[in-house]
Length: 436
Ligand code: MG
Image (cartoon, rainbow, N blue to C red; front, side):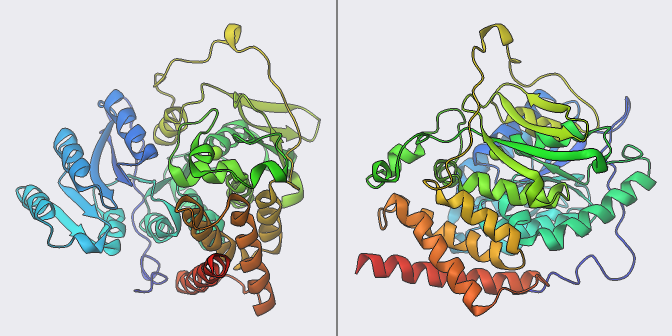
């Protein structure tokens, strides 16, 4: 693994991508990493709806080559990457390489480096990072280091490497502000969260003084097992855990939503994104998912963000900011919304939320260890190698082991990759012991 730390940092700072069309301005040029996943396909839908303002210039997938080929032809994209290195030499990949080579500056690559390489396309203004898992971390880092806007759907980037990524985002925000590309204060759009909760908080904070914020209220649907006891969770199957009540999402995030690990990851992300201490970040269950999150101010006022439960809204805001464009989906009708309920999360039953809060509060490399263990545990659960409650148990066992071995200050992506690999191996051993 090549070191990413020096890239884009040494020498002169890279140019700031404009990404800010006025009336006559060119379209924003978008790279979509993870273009065949849930966020990726919804991003392409938003692009289709605003083809006068957005243009896709790069697409990356892990292994769905046929779908990538279809997207490349539909959007006329000649910079493509396939993440799964085992597909090098595959006939369909050769065909795509020829498609890309038909344009003088086209490019095609296979492997993780090829995916990250798309963040460096000179013509790209915005990179939508919808890669799943730890793989997205390096792409986030390189996007910001190259002076491009990062529209971030990859949770692990901030959970694992927030200490490295946020300084890059602050630096790019400052340069964007100096170039007249953002408001006079507050975030200038270098890092746009693609998540309903963080998109909501981002919008509630617009025009506000961060020093006057007293609390962030991150809302949670509570998942499909809200109200159940631990005993009732022992026999949960993957199919039951994949059926989310309000959001339609990919498999990993659906399981994380059911365990409340997703909310835990979002609390850590909010800490980094909004520079908020953990004791000022509350989680509240809002089963209808109509309120996407709230911000409470010093005078007791609370701003909430509401909208249709459809990810195309936060995706579009991340791509249109600081503008607002026509709604990509039917707006909410309050006359038919009915009741809004609120409840405290059950952290005793859904241990993952408490574990994530602990990892965030300790900081350093502990969130990295936690995240890697969770990825392994969720995959094991989906493969029916461990039970549902085994997910939290595995994560906790690996976190304990990492704390005993010594949590480190976050210093580099290479270091985080080492901790990630160690944690995965520990988690695998935990799963294997349970099966023996
Ligand atoms: Mg969310």
